[in-house]
Amino acid sequence: MTAARVREGYRAYLVVVPAGCLVGLVGGAFRWALEHADRLRGEVLEAAAGFGAPGWLIPVALAALGAAVACAIARRVPNAAGSGIQHVEAVWRGEAESGSRSLWLLPAKFFGGLIAMGSGLVLGREGPIVHMGATIGSEAGRRTRLGAEDTRLLHAALSGAGLAAAFSAPLGGLLFVCEEVTRSVRPRLVLLTLMGTATAVACSGLLVGDAPIFPVSAVPVPVWTLPVFLLFGAAAGALGAAYSGLVVGMLTACDRLTRAPLVVRATVIGAVVGLLMAYDPLLAGGGDPLSERLLTGESPAVAVLAAYLAIRFVAGPLSYAAATPGGLFAPLLTLGALWGTLAHAVAAPLLPAQSVGPGAFALAGMAALFAGVVRAPITGVVLVVEMTGATTLLVPMLVACFAATLTADRLGSEPIYDSLRRRMPAHS
Image 1: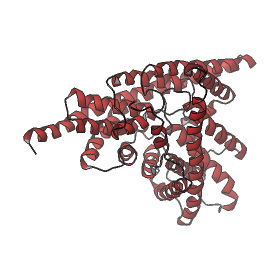
Image 2: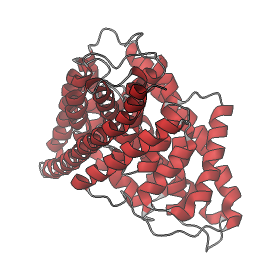
Image 3: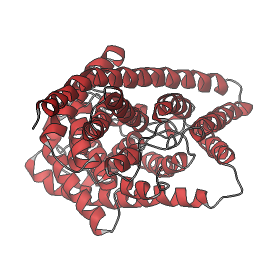
Image 4: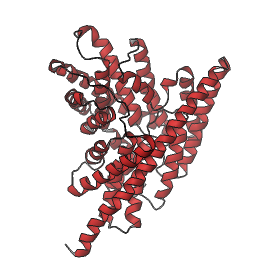
């Protein structure tokens, strides 16, 4: 290896640190802005409730307008709609290029995602932040004149930094890159990703803090309950396969509406979500407030849980079909928490009085449903542990994720981002 190649190799490590800091600041700013947008949306809904029956028009108009504006923004920049994770994976595989106009992805993802999610669409913050992180990585490589391979590595590594900033989960970001984006473990990739995720989380913490997103107390889990989590995980895998099919099916159905412009389609979808939001604000949005309630052990009636699960099960794929910037992870985690709490409520009469509570099943449900849909079980487990600090549930979550992954595979369900990547236009 020549001296120049050695210097270039070390230069990538010098570039990833400031680039990771930038990803953290952008991701932290996005989270901060989204938290304030969610708070403002809540105030608007409270004010609308004071107008009586006509007040339901306000959330409908809010969500419809937000979806329309976000869709219009996404249309201006290639690959700005949707999660963006499938585009990151396609770039890694050489199936797509990051694009000469890739820097326009940053404002499109930031403001489009903020408007879409802030208005109430059932979408996740992680998709835009991951895509913005990958864009920053590839641009940092180009502008510092790194080689093509190192630029490609930075693109993948800083996508993981984006996920880490989205959920304050540095190890989850690393595993996401290795298990999902690249499906490989290379020493150089691991080191670059570690440096990127560490600096991203440190910098995002300056804006949103560094505490776990859903801190929970330690939950002891008896060994004899592991077979219960195995069966629970298998059911979550079947649910995940159905959810993946619904996401792709909803996109396919909307594609057939060729006479309706994309912005009109987004407006209608936003209006539907607005109706749900007018009835109950917990039916809309990314789902963090609902997840927080469930993880603290709050367990509504079985009928209420089933209704939340059924409605959000459809509202997530419907929102994704609006072609606005926004991801799948956060609503998926909330759906998993709902499924876990519902499963515990149904099985509670069969469990001993001193058995694990609904919070443990909610946590396991988050990881298991993630594994069934994304097909990245270790990433799901570590992500949930870093978000909650629930290390005592590692073994039950691993058991549930194993069963969920195996079940979804046996049902012939394809990992969701493989399906979404195949839907991308050629040479995008």
